[in-house]
Amino acid sequence: MTTTLPPLAEAYLARLRAAASVLPADQAAELVSDISEHLSIALGPDSDVRDAAAVLDALGAPEQLVSDAAGGDGATAPEPSSSRREWIALACLVASVPLVVFWPAALVTWIVGVSAMLTSRRWTVADKGFGMVLAFAPAMVAVMGLAGFSAMESCASDGTGPEVCTQVGQPLIPAPFGAVLLIAWLVLAGYGLVRLLRRLR
Amino acid sequence: MDNQALLGQLRRGVLEYCVLALLAQDERYGYDLVVALSEAGLVASQGSVYPLLSRLRRDDLVETTWRESTDGPPRRYYRLTAAGAAALDAFRPAWAEFSSHVDRLLKGAS
Image (tube, rainbow over all chains, first blue to last red):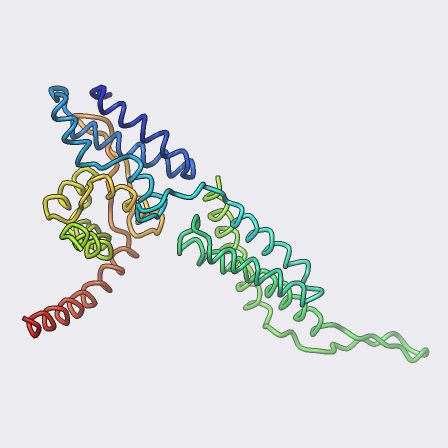
């Protein structure tokens, strides 16, 4: 069932759509949809101009709603919806994985990535929690590398008999536990990456 | 500071918990929540509730479902999540302690 809104309410929605263009697309669509729903319920078919004016007055100015949605206190205009900080965070976190072979570079890249992620205004606290799981990537790679190295075999031959191989170290993490840990991390980190990327659309 | 500005400051920190408290009783659609908060004198502009609901949803404190309505377009219903219920449970004793301290100070000052 569709509802025809009074011209005054349609004009308010047009103003809201224009003001909401500074928000991320999904947030802007949600705000406009919520306010449309509100107006459809509050303004019945018999509503006159006075009713519409009262409902719109109670809602507040469209620009104020956009400011609230952007996280502002209404004193300043909302910031443009740039996602540069978030892309820098993801790029640094991904880059820190191969850089593990040269740990000082990995550490610097990782710190920049985590700082950018934690100070993001587009990602929620829950997003950042999953982001931190993802940020364990270099550590996971390092641990797996060390686990493999420590369990390496050393082979030698005295020239008279067959080559004799002995295990030089013990795996750092027992195999079944390590596999479960790795799979759990991969699932959580994969979900975290999808969640973070979804917010940037 | 005028009365409206003072009320605005007081509402800012507690409004989201008032929304969670309303949803702890039953699931509700947005307009219904706005009217309840408005009648309780907890919002200055009704429209500001919607960005708050959106944030609560992004923070996984509430979840939403669309339902058909017999007298208008489909409505978005809000329901408390387990995380939302936990946040409300944590807020209740904190608020009781906070408000009792303020009451005690105000009584002492009068």
